Length: 461
Image (cartoon, rainbow, N blue to C red; front, side):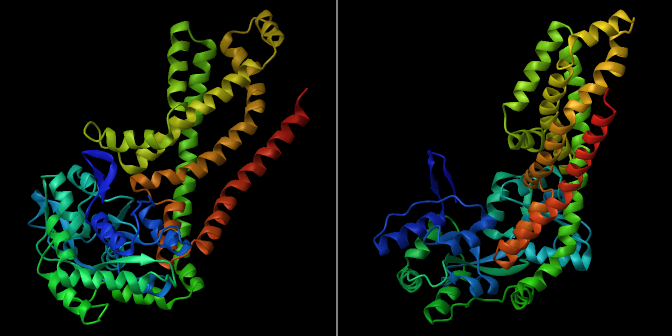
């Protein structure tokens, strides 16, 4: 679904029409609730809404933990590539060792995870279905694997792309309800009736999605076979394996990926903080020692960065500047975090520099020290002691804010945890494990900073 261009406050799409059909038969008024795609299962289990409809794919794991409707649409997973690559990238086998984009927590993601193990394919997971195709057109990835509905939309938006003719797998769209929902039987009855009298067909014809696969599915559903359809999903063995594993077995399987993601988070945070400190020192020095014009320009820069969200800055660097300079995702992430936190660091350093008593500065000048010597020998060391505690706080905050970079395909700790949680259908164990890892990363730094503070207090005259 997407915003109606005639009225952006409204949403439109085939799921909206399906929801309206169900609501009308149930005697209710449909109301759209915004939920992140990877959080749909957890939100459904919580009972945040009556039914989830968002191109949700039928899997054994979902059927084991949620109430799942009869399938109402057959889709085919297809590869999308640039037109210039259409002759050489026709199947997943042709993309061994290449970067292939998809959505997290989907059938396509599970298929690509298997390809990553078998052929070394690099899986690039996105939060939405728009940017994968935009990045494919820009050359940041070599292909996109998603269902044909999204692929057709992606090609329409990016004329330089083309969909491969041979599908990779087949799957089914379903609705999700909370476990034990009393509405399930009524919703299934409405869907079966609407398939039989042509109302569902009319919706898909309206959106240009009707094809020869649907009548076979509807015949199977009418016959009472809820898992009906032309073919079994290519990822079913993967899903069945995940379903058979306990939460602890799944946790052990995901631990290596979580540890790798934790390393990415730590390295990303350290490099970004180094950049933030360097820029912060430069900006603070310019605001304390610079001419009036320099001070005004630097003040404006600090207020601009502090007054706009980090997420917006990240989008501008990675997506907004793509037509000018195509920054790699990790570079854009480092720049966004570094530039954002440099503004806050500069305020810490400026305040620390200006907190040094004026008498000490007068004494340094009386001794014939230059401004640079005064900064290096008198003002700077004392300012560093004052700035250490807030610097430590900022690093811990940056460590946590690094979770935002998943929107530009960097798979850090929180992103890997969300994939883990989506696959097992629970946030409890993944969330606790992720929290423990963040504590392991941040607590040693805080402890080291406290030791330094105590040591400097002991040597302070």
